[in-house]
Image 1 (cartoon, helix red, strand yellow):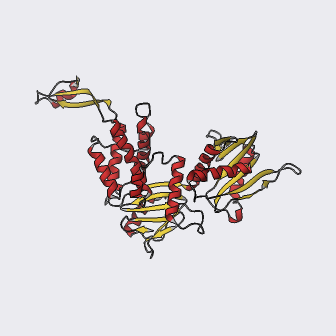
Image 2 (cartoon, rainbow, N blue to C red; image 1 turned 90 degrees about the horizontal axis):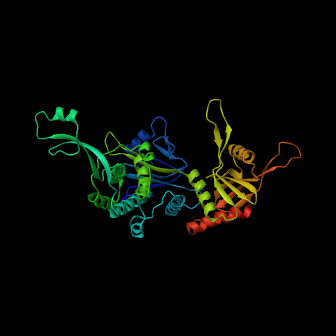
Image 3 (tube, rainbow, N blue to C red; image 1 turned 90 degrees about the vertical axis):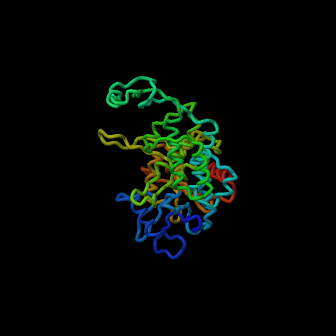
Length: 416
């Protein structure tokens, strides 16, 4: 679905778009070239390059190429619901519940941008947080500054004072302390606001970011890197910045400017659907499963080369109920004839043995609920077999998201 006014293309995961498509999902050769440059020689996990186009993988979210926005939505199979607005709502609801959208968007704005891209929701959430920070008062900090001043303040830096002021006797090169807004937290927010002016595709968001910039102190440019965000230490004073900085990190680290023409930048906010499904099942159980203890990704070392770090094995979810241990592994795919692949079975067998699982369950999404019991054979004749079953969890997306979460929890609880 392409909206010519908004320049948005919406596709499902594992679908392809090409320059020679006759339908609405068509990209220009220039946009394809930008995606090819972004992919580089090593490729990216979000899509594969094909003849005259790209084919998307199991990642979902939004890609922006210049003024074109490509939304990639989740989908169980081709026979399921084709309503793209429906699946967009599912994706946004899942992102909210797993904590990717930890900030709320105003209902008034939702009405205005509901037909736009997922990127707009991130931008709106960020702008709401920055508005709150400005209203509360941006944090000020002390910093050291050096300058050639006409008044003496602070401490004279004699080496620079002599070299710079041989002629200008009325000046002093000094080092002094300043208490102002110019520090790394505000610099990150300012850089993100400047980026939003580039990538925002709606007049509403453009107007809003320009208004905020009028009330935001001008900052020097900084280089966005993983270390920049890793080194931020939160405390009671700056905790209010956390949500805005989380979105800043997503936007700044996933933005790839076009250094040649400057018109076809690439911004990728993409999420591995397997990890999103895993996390969604876990948070649903954590909130609504009350009959036992739910633990995420316990890990054990299972292989090691001498002198190297050990490799860990990590199941998605471990449930302890009535002194029994159940291991759940989630996969966002539909197995052929409800039969897991050979690699999945090997993985489940390792979980069963290493974690002494009383019952190991492979959880797939589906159009209907279905439980198929199974087991691994014992290594010895006459020994006890190891229960290992397949569970298809219905996508109960017609109801509210929390009701779907309850359904997942109840379904798993009934089996255990």
